[in-house]
Image (cartoon, rainbow, N blue to C red; front, side, top):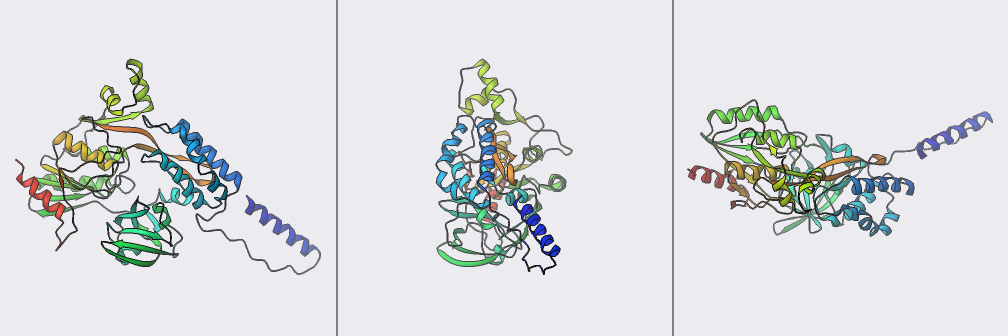
Amino acid sequence: MKLHRSLLSAALALFAVLALGQTPPVTTPPTTPPPGERVLTKEQREEVLKSLANIMENRAFVPGVDLKKWPEFIDKQKDDLEKAEKEVDLSRIVNRALRDFGISHIRFLTPRQADNRNRTSVVSIGVMARTENNALVVTTVLPKSPAETAGIKQGDIITQVDGKAPENSAVLNGEDGSEVKLKVKSGEAEKELTLKRARVSTARPETLTWIDEETAVLKIWTFSRGYSRDNIETLMKEANGKAKNLIVDLRSNGGGSTASLIHLLSLFVKPDTDIGTFISRNTVTDYEKDHTPSIDPVVIAAAAKNKYKTRKQSIEPFKGKVAVLINRGSASASEIFAMGLRETISAPILGTKSAGAVLASVFGTLPQGFQIQYPVSDYVSIKGVRLEKNPIVPDEEVTGASQDGKDPVVVKAVEKLKAAK
């Protein structure tokens, strides 16, 4: 709005000069600030925070979590909020307050991040990372990205971004061609890198890789945008044709939509099989009609009538033996899938512990182009396991990088499947 007014004022001033027959002064046209650098007025910040408070207090829901404490948490950031003029500053402070809830699937997005959420490409250095101990642990390195070119690998730890400890992975994003200075720890070695951000594709098609004549690995990168039902069904038809053993690789798969999740589950488990229970505000209300009020999701799930079930698909579920691979980057839908196969078809899980981040969430629109991801349901598996804050422990913990083209986790999974009766 201020930009429009300044342009109007400039035009009126120019008209006045021309009317007097004078030579107009040379002016520099206004430029649009880079995404994230837009300066917000106090009124705009207050407008965003007011809308956010409404969502947190009236729409967000997790049983046993008092989300009405939001005013208390954001008030602790009051002094910093007064100085938060830029979009990125506001995002950093709000997300710091949101972390006080200690739950997953709750984050404040800048307009740039909100726009990127609906794209299959981003301007970044090309890594996906989780925040841990004031650093970023790299969970995925995207192909043909600045990070891959610089030699950054999965498991590396980014300890500094532009000289500061990173609060979240958003600091890796920026303008196309802009530089970012990193300090990266890889094993015992630490190095300093300067990378130029670029537009990188986040779309990674699912693959089926044959280990031998009867064993294959199905790699699923995401359950979010980029998940291809048609491609997966094509791959599953191939697997159904000759595979006796199938390994589903969900390592560094951060989850996505429940629609994609139930599609994949239904390609392995017969239709109408109970997988678990999503516990929403309505689920709790229904429970309290006939029971003493409880905040225990496991107790509420046991009494809930509506279960999350598999559905009939165009192809029959896989009939061979199945194993699932996970790691610390496997979250949300990946965890539900892994636990679902463990509990319904006794599929072994290999790798390392999962993220323990399993809440159903939605995205809410806020003023000035911001968005908020917030939880609306908890989840409990059909055998009574709450996965939020409870990472899946694999049946066999296997770590290590690939050597001579052999992935130790895949090798162990093949051994386990072939040894099973």
